[in-house]
Length: 183
Image (cartoon, rainbow, N blue to C red; front, side):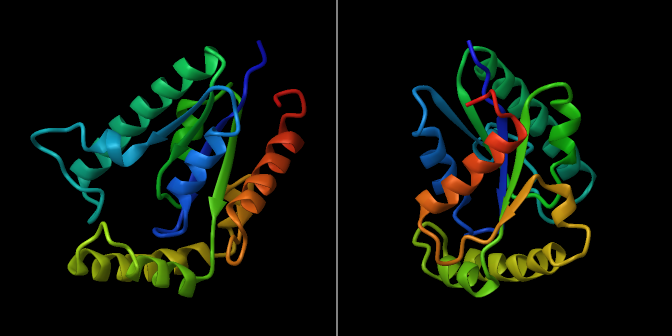
């Protein structure tokens, strides 16, 4: 049985990450989308949100990533294509847990205005949360402009104006280039 690489998929909030992760998984006979937000919310009591970052938020993020990787590896060895999605600036924590395994890291980076527009159109977020996310999106976008940002990822894709299938194709090209025998 051929093993697919685990895809670590990140993006700016409202960048289309979750939709893309689901659609990527649907391209395979067996696909699993691990939503890290869902893993975070398994904590019934004592949950600390990822922002603002503090010691406990960092600790809970480490636990969540360990769990995401354990789940991903279990599915991967059983022939599933796996995508882990999380908003993060550096895939290094996942690479730590997944060393010696097939991994492709992808960051989706649409134009700032595109994310802000998409965030404003969200119906699953209340107005106060959308305003908080706007501030975070702007700050995080600034971090993605740093010189070393793109070196952290196997591929950084500007999906502004792209159809999801075009973005998927770019990701598949990256996978094929890095692991030719995996597809």
